Amino acid sequence: MSAEARTSPSRQASLLQTAQRGVERALSMGADQSEVVCDYDRETRVDLQKDDILNASTSEEATFGIRVFKNGSMGFATVNDPEEIEQACAEALALASASPPDDLNGLDDPRPIEPLDQEPDPAIATMGIGDLVALGADMLERIKNHDARVVTDSGQVYTVVSERAIATNTGIALSDARSIAGGSFFGMAVSEDEVGSFDHDGQNVLSVATLRGELESAADRFVVKTLGAIGAQHGESFRGPIILAPEVVSDFLIANLLSVLTGNAIRTGKSPFAERLGEEIASPSLTLIDDGRQEGGVATRAFDREGTPTRSLAILQRGALKAFLYDTYEARAAGAEPTGHAQGSASSPPAIGSSNLVLEPGDEAFADLCCEPERAIVVSRFSGSCNPITGEFSGVVKGGFLMRRGARTPIKETLIAGSLFDALKNVSGVSKETRVINGTRTMPSVRVEDVSVTAG
Image (cartoon, rainbow, N blue to C red; front, top):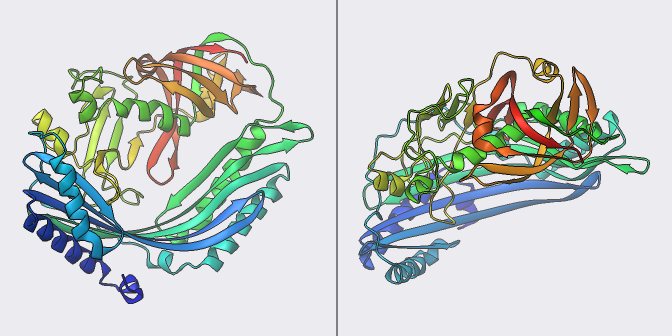
């Protein structure tokens, strides 16, 4: 791809034309069906290390993913040069010929796509390395000015400009563009001979106007998190309530639940909820929505990795299970409609995933969630495992606190264990405050009762 093509405003049209030519070439080589996805990404990035700027770089990459179907079998190949698409078609067909046939294989027909009002911020594309170096240096200075004990071990600030085109022989021909800016910080606090627990924070946004403010907030949270681990003491062992921070709600509670609510988990017998659509599986205080069209959402797109229209989908509604997530393959297997949840890039075949997740807030202040119980553990970060099929989990609380009627004591590594499915039912409070995590997940804090806590 020439330098002129890389900077042309008609790149989307060019990518779509390339995708359509690739589809035609695959068909002419013997494919029954073909899909070509073209991704273009330009990333400008400044890396941080040990409280300083480490390096800065700009990279561009075009990726072309070719998926073909022949006699019910699928093959997939990817290249980075449009001149090599014919070779990729041949490789995909060869893989299809060596793969077993599957009656569920095949592409979807086009569906009506409602355009989004959300347009990429052109100012993101014009941010240069100098702008990001200055921003990164300001964030490092802000962290040190808050407290010199905090060490930013690693981190980054970046912008990503992306464009995508999808074409299929069934008539799908779509393209879009988006631009994201963001940053992250990872490190710990060091006080004399004590090193606190590692922690992290960051944010992604869709506009330059909000970038600095959001990164400042992330840097401030990073300072609070790392300093909170200083002076940790041995906790107490008991069975009772824990309060999950928004990040833990997202990465532990919701992520493990979603893993058994996909069409794949249902079809393969790995979900305990396969026959429970419409039933109450969680506390009535939990309503979970995945909104692929959320205004301002970093994962917002008009269509998914397969060209299926996205939408707002209620997964839990007052604790009742309302929907599963499907791509085209799994929807066909279930006799259902795809929900617009095929995710991924041109580098691999699509897989089911969420977009902009929102767990609706409750009506309690976070302080009240912590102060109401006589004794509770605040879980700021969780390092452990969960078997999403059985629901059993166990792991260590990192940077956590023992709460006694509002008095907060940082604790050393404390083990918590229980059942994910019991935890969903035993939610006794949801905070009215929420946090937007990485621009894609809006989560409150959640209090869960009857969890085993073992002091470290």
